[in-house]
Length: 403
Image (tube, rainbow, N blue to C red):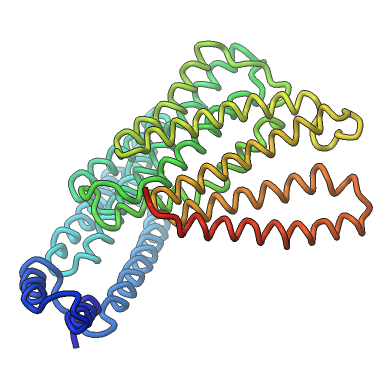
């Protein structure tokens, strides 16, 4: 029995949707250029093997880490360096040998080699007492992962590069802020706003990357989507809390502010431009929404936070309402973007953002002003009516034709 695509092609021939000569030509082309025919369940078996390989790679890395740490102190400096180089050569050499016969194993071994590179960099610096900074080690590790991705086009290197490059930028920012704080003790929590903005914008840029050029490779086209999706929720929550966390903090020095905001906004925009399509416009609009919402949230926080609405008067309530309305607008824009691009995950994230915003607004601004019984009744109505309305909107956006 042929695998799924061949079976479906046969059904299309029986239904008269594809003529037999075209079907034979497709079979010949797939035999020459595509994957060989698999037995039923072959696709599921390949996925299972991939998971087993990934788990085996993690266990192997953990075992090697424990072994090296147990015998590290007993090794001479030259022996330590020899061991680190041997691990790198063994992983990448094994990956090169397995590339033609077992590509999944080759990907796992090359990924372990890139992970071992980071450990080797820091352990070599510790062994030879090099006066280095941990942020520079992150930079070298990120460069190694980037070089590995350019040479191999495999998703582990791309995933490490997507994580290590922002980590290096964050470490460099913290180091720069410490240097400025040594001469200016009034920085407070103000520097935290810049990386929070960069994290949210970069997560959104990663989240927009599933339809990348084919040069990124099959799994590589999804790795940025997964990283961005996992980071988007905590990044958005952190950004929502920033106005209250940084309330009263003095402004950054002009040179530090220009440097930080240029990287926090510029790096995601450059990446969006490199990914192509309409991503630059979308990420630029997101940056404008973020900065406008920051000004609105600071104005509302200055009037009085959610904990002081009764004492602050109606102006604070209006300010908090506008902030939540701004987040509703952001969720709606994300859902509309997903509908226009045919991406269900963006529609779902947008709908979830709107639902969470409505709940937060109800608990912050409405529930405390009502009797407990009335508040619970209102909460039930919010779940029923609001959930029905959001689900209907979500389905309509998912069913909308892609433009």
